[in-house]
Amino acid sequence: MNIKNAIKGSFLFFLLGRLGYVASNSRIFNISLSQGNKLKDTDKRSWMESSVFYRLMKWVDSVLQKVDKWLHKSLSESVTMSWLVAGRRKSITTRESSVLSSSILAGSLTRIVRSIGFSDLLAVSIGFYMVIDYAVRRLPGISAIGSVWDELLLLFVVFYVVLTRVRSSGKIRFNLTPMDLPVLIYLIIGITHVFIRALDLSVAIEGFRAVFQHILWYFAATQLIRDEDTAEKVVDGMILMGLFLGLHAIYQYVMKVPMPGNWVDTAENITTRAYSIIGSPNILGVIFVLIINIAMARALSSNGWKQRVYYSGSALIMLAGLLFTMSRGAWLAFAFGVGIFTLILVPKLIVPLAGAGAGFVLFGGTLSERLLYMMSPVYLMKSAAGGRLYRWAIGYELWTRNKLFGVGLGRFGGAVAINNRLAPFYLDNYYLKTLVEMGVYGVAGLLFIIICFIVSSLRAIGNQHTIKGRIMTIGLFSGAMGVLAQNFVENIFEVPGMVVYFWLTVALINAYGKFRNVEAEGRGN
Image (cartoon, rainbow, N blue to C red; front, side, top):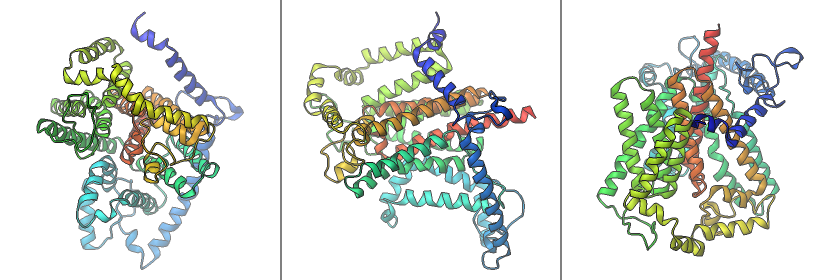
């Protein structure tokens, strides 16, 4: 039996297939638009396009289009507000639209903005979240908004999307995706949990914001990323940021920049760990886990040799930066993500890849020593006495006393609990933290949205009709899976930027899936 057949015959492959089948044939996710409830061309339409939720959202969107058209007409006829809708009366896309006035000065600015694409600029800015956050918090004059700049930007994006719809006189529609409903359900689970289990309402709301608020960036991203050109710009922006972080990480390691914290065990002979502008080697490592997979996909899907050299070189530099973070969790997550990338794209290479990984573990010098130390009796004893295993045991014990709904959001194992002096440490396991704080109720919601992400991503990969689209979707999916894997040993989603990056990646996956559907419909016509 070859590797490909073994994968297809595995229990995991069977489970994912059944999940996809159930989603595609459930009365919530897939009710036929044809008469008599008989399935009609289901192989050409996603569950989203034939679901009750999708039809409801289409109806809501049609109502809002009428409102947009009315507002456009009212503003056009208004003397004081006409500058908002001035310009040529034609159908405009989100990427081409602008909120600037039609005065001489504003007209010049409009031409400049349109040359780079204001919508593209907003979309790319999401990909530079970490860099912008670092700059805003440290630059004189704007550091005062360091804690709220992202919320202000999110509100501006919402305002921009609404305004472009009004300027188009209702011609621009909402960009609906297969993940909209699962995300809304997950948000509802979080909201209801606050009402069910809030020992201290202020702490519960703070805990809710820490977990759920930045997921809203998914909806912002899906409205901005409507075409492949914009998606590629966002991807290239993320790779450029990863290249910068990789070069900076290499510089820190070579120059032996002192570590600002006690990031290694006293028994280990390590004096430097790269952390760049992120401030944490583990979070820097997971950024590399995500973007390296995307850069590899970009390199494999590019046509020109110059592009392939650039993207391959960027991936190698980020790989060096990943190694210099000395983050064992990130290394394992990277191996997991690359394994998924290889299994889906070229299954025959999984054995050589596994051999290369084994070679690194056995002959990687200081790097492999750090990895192997994790399995030593000394490490396990110290971890059980006051490290991860100790914290996990306390978290598990606390959950056994509050199994269904947990102790409440923001009350244990995360930043909110520490800031409110409700817990002395991080749990360093986001799934266990969710279990302790939200109980089975919350973990079921988290598992639900992860399964929906996997199913919709695999469907997007299978829907690709071009090699480029397939490779890019696989790269995005495998990078996101690496992030999910590292959550087993870190509170990755405690960092707002990582939540934004994960959901930006999900938005890109759904966007590539939609590009294929549009092309297929065009060929069908």
